Length: 267
Image (cartoon, rainbow, N blue to C red; front, top):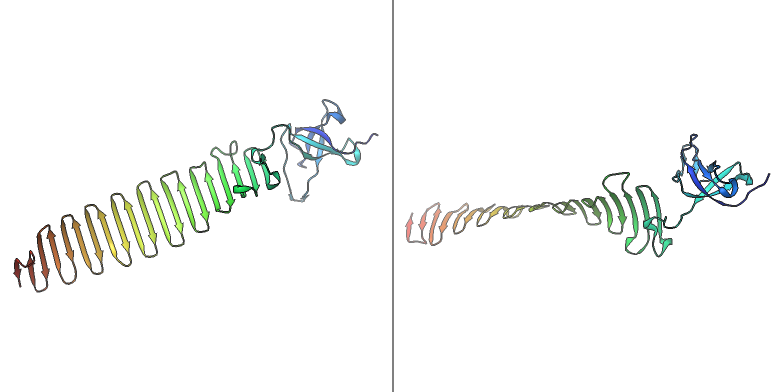
């Protein structure tokens, strides 16, 4: 019997192995002639009971075929090769040794040590999912991306969650910020700021509570209460109450009432 050693070019004609051995059916015209196919065993770098590296190429893939002991009745598929314009897009780079790509239909894993794209990127697209998904590990941190609309970014100094251009949540070591269109909320260890333009609310451990809706405002602190609706104002402290409206002024103390800075005084 004639023996065939070395590698031969072939094509995958079927890849659904009924015995689940990782075999593919191959066509090798230079050995079998036209029209004959044979099941080829895999040559994989890692295999065993319930373990292994499993990756089966699709039908019509270019494949390298060898034969066990040179016997054409025992083909082995040992690898694949690309035809013209078949290389994955992420692998079309000027320095290919710095990029490793594993791609199936709809799923791409890219390991890059190239320029500004250093890191690991996992992309899931149609037909696997309807909305493109992306997971990126790089020098900036980690990013989870859902169709460039919903994103989560984790960096050394903050976590940012985003839904469209108007909705964001940002967490740092000393603050939390929430934003929905024109509404913003910021929380720190000592304060809470709420902004719903033109109205704002500020709460602070040092200065108390402040409410503003221009021209009106209110301030509540440990030293008293201030109410303003320009030009009118009210100030309340433990020692006095003061009411003012432009030139008019009234002050109330525990011992008397003062009107217009002494124009009338009652004790």
